[in-house]
Image (cartoon, rainbow, N blue to C red; front, side, top):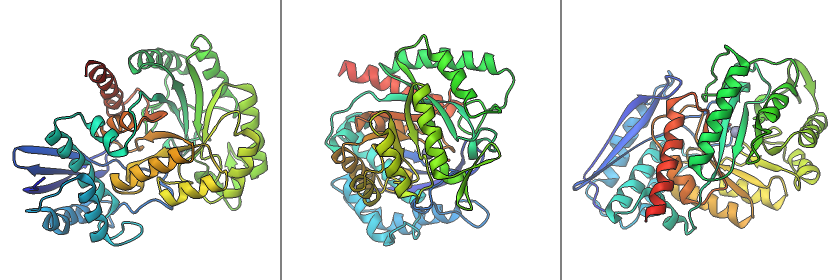
Length: 395
Ligand code: PGA
Ligand code: ZN
């Protein structure tokens, strides 16, 4: 693959903040990728390069300057070659030199170019690279937003419905329940991820409503992302104005699992509370999924450590937490080696790039988190999955 040109520009994400979009050209081929942005970012994530005013002009300058100089005019035999070069040029452990956002925009565009050159779908190219059999992921559809995504009106950041089965059927079912929930809640604002953002007086109320709504749907269960690092202040967790110790919070989770059909609990404790994760696993690990996100940040070393210490049994995989697809795929392989389930995930600030759908299917992920059904950028990912499902059946 001979790279002829590299261009980048700023586009706005779903929160109206600038993010980077990069286009690579190789002879008659052209590929573009844009990078999403988190709000409740883990402190161990790779560095998203931002100007002091929140812009991405430095990240763009890195793509069109240092990175372009290294890529243009050279021939690459694989997308791994390009990622390896990016990692060498950056030369830092946290990608703070080039910026994980700048690097990932190149990494994804390069993957698209190689897929085009091989005349195979993007998901197939990812599956080949990861050496896994593609599979339809369960949909983790965000229905209610809280925490940092909705001014902490609800304690937990995300309330999700997990829907099993073909994407086409699952999406239809999810839409039905999403609409009914909207009717029940009445006029409430929307949160960052395109789910409703209501207010409740008790921790249980959202679970009562959701379990009632999904009762006629055997393919559905409930998941939460507690995003507990955001709730943790002065050695205590703050939920609905009350303080909880890690043990108190553990009992909250035990109660939820006992009373409701809970599929998974993501980031139940602060990102550095390794012992609390391990203790919860001994209590609930056989009954539900304990998912690492801020805990593991798609970092192979942190996933291996979580495995060695029995802290979780499922992992969120977000390419922009680590900065290149090459490292993301190592994280996926470590996840599989640990016999954890992988859940591919978007970010709360999204663009119309549907890469995560091809990625989730390509790595045979257990699930995909792509947000609520009330925002076009989220729907595009689900629609891409439906198209992939059709495409894969006809190949
Ligand atoms: P973020 O939230 O994209 O704001 O980090 C998503 C998540 O925590 O899973
Ligand atoms: Zn999370």
